[in-house]
Image (cartoon, rainbow, N blue to C red; front, side, top):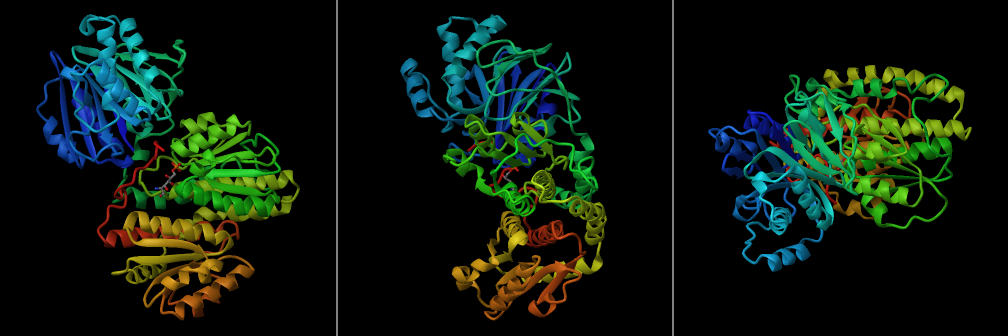
Length: 615
Ligand code: M6R
């Protein structure tokens, strides 16, 4: 999604803005731009495509102490230079960058035209109107912008914000005023930092890592002014907010490649560490601890999107199996507009970023209905993490690759911890069950490391990759706890390699998808536990009989798969509940290898953004 970065009070503004934009590249974008406040005018440079197209345009810009920058992910209008941010008001007096969607755009555009028919819109965006509205407010108040007092500027800014419906993170600079940036947030992330001399604002914590140690997290509806000497924050009612700066949760090195060729590969290899960190202080032989479940539920609802949804599906299997409490799983975007009935339930929101607009809205919808909420979230400073009643941070560290990998492992472990805790409360998951699980969980990181460095597995992955040459369709099959892995495997393959892939529960095969299987179709079958494993072997036979190439992912103690597949990839044996995590890593590596073979950028797949902060 769009990214915002702003600096005031530093003579290296251009350099810092470009640095900020580079840090936001991973979020996904199609154009970028900056605007500097310089003496008599605002200097704006914009370019379509990668940041390398913008960089030469800013090389010789004059010094400035104040500026804003933006990476755009097109929603209103094509990715063109005209639609790229920053957007100007009439006479280039005001520049704005915006992330979000202004829902009353049509109405406001008409209003602006009525108020001043000399205004010509230069872009198709909903964002441009914010610059025009602010200029109109200044003109109506008859204030001289260049000499206006902060209070005067702020009261005009508030009048504009009151007119906007929808979601926004905003930063605004004004011609002749290199001493401040105006800002606001509503349903879109924005953070602020100030060290007494330099103020920075950004839509993403990872952009300011290394530039500052503490940040102010804005609440919904907060707005204000970032000057060269301080930050003033007000709430939606216009009251001054006594905000407290919080220490950044991440260090610089964590958000860098550290010798790996891609973030995706780095993050796949970080999974043993994620397991250790996520379980630390929470799992012992006789107790699940370190987080609270805010309510003893008779029904659970889980919400999430994409990979987080797939992790939620696995959590559903775990919770139902270990605690016997029924679970309803919804895509967050479906939940938010639905009208859940039934008993008051605990709503669990799963999200890596903690800023996904639909998941955030689903949590808010749940809270409005009076349901207690629990977040399984990676970014602990995020809006979802701050809004839920109880938080289980997965401690995966910054995930930069657009394709979620290590976060899935953390989310699944989070779901598993909740399942075991509920199982203990329901007395359906016993002390000896936990102690047995604990023994295996302690060995899991080592098993993962062994697997990630296993030469035999690397060779098998290369062989499996050959089945995908010139193929445009693939299927992933699983059953029970391997079904979510089939969904996640297919999601990973399609998003980074652009091969059309579908995940199915094996039992669903004969109900339609089998019609698509033909000579050479690659089918990845992911082993499951217990009686459903034999059923999957049957599915493998069915697709093989139609000419499919079957790749079976299973564990080392499984002798049955060998005679049911063209290729079998075996991973170390672990506890049944943890086994899917090892299978998933194989799917991640397979997708990565296939995507790279096809020349795709695995960290920044086309059309996608890291965190989907608009609906
Ligand atoms: O930050 P979140 O976990 O809430 O993000 C949810 C999805 O947008 C995300 O998992 C997406 O599906 C990934 N690109 C999948 O790899």
